[in-house]
Length: 414
Image 1 (tube, rainbow, N blue to C red):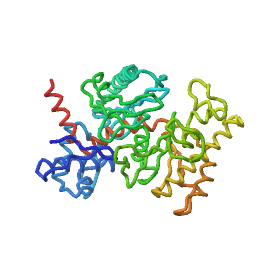
Image 2 (cartoon, rainbow, N blue to C red):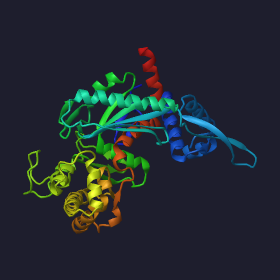
Image 3 (cartoon, rainbow, N blue to C red):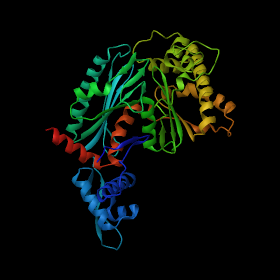
Image 4 (tube, helix red, strand yellow):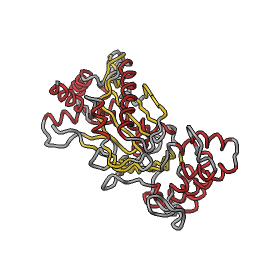
């Protein structure tokens, strides 16, 4: 059986002939997906929700319990009066997802259980700009091992890890092709980190894509949206009908290098007037005179904006207008239900959104722009690392047989 194939929303089961084994694999995913969607429920309710017979649903639930994916608890009365049935739900002890994050100024990790609840979270300062990739990866492995140790104390067993990075990751590769704000080019992050975390499958993904997947899993912004976020650079992700739009080479969403003022400031990419030169963190800090600020520079901007520092307010207004111009083009092109502000932009939303709303209202022409279409992520700067862990969990839920395959491969190595 081949490994699950990757898609825009985590993973899907491998396709093949409709064999008995393949049908059972698909039905396991059907039942586990129903448990994830419905919450605590009975076998009979699962049978009704999936269209399976009670006997088939019960057999599949038993298999999921044996795999540690579902737990049984409590008794409810259903159907005829006096007929008891045990309740099943996703197991909050057992398989879990490990999310890791490499930021320009920090490293992070979190572990979530099958219900997507964050169970442990670590964030440490780390000056990663122009730092040797090997040193960054070695420190990230130590952060990962700390998160794994905390998870094991909680009875959780992370079955994979995904790393969020502020850069381009090829569609068919787990190599970081280009991360300009880190100074990385063609870094084999997956290979190097896997050697430091033996036995744990590791993958890498763009941070903006993972932030969007975290929003999609929460289900609060619909299934068609644009997610835009910022740390040192600017990233965006497009979700269309619940699927992440990656582009032919995996490079979709490079909003930071969309020209907003074609005759404007030169950009290191070689163009002029790119959004990043007006709404990126470095640009905002430069425009208000805080380019030498140390520590959490977003927090500095928030504090100064709250204090009504005039240069900071002006710089954020300019950034908001530039963002509005760029996003108006995106809205006119793909007609999303919502535009979601994540990352540092969520922390600064109170000062960015007035200018954004002005430009969106003036420039969106496919339909009248509704101000309610611009929303602020509740995940804020936690989105990428939570999305990274979520993508591991989604893989398990959409193809629970993956766990058994992983265990068999691990036993063969031993």
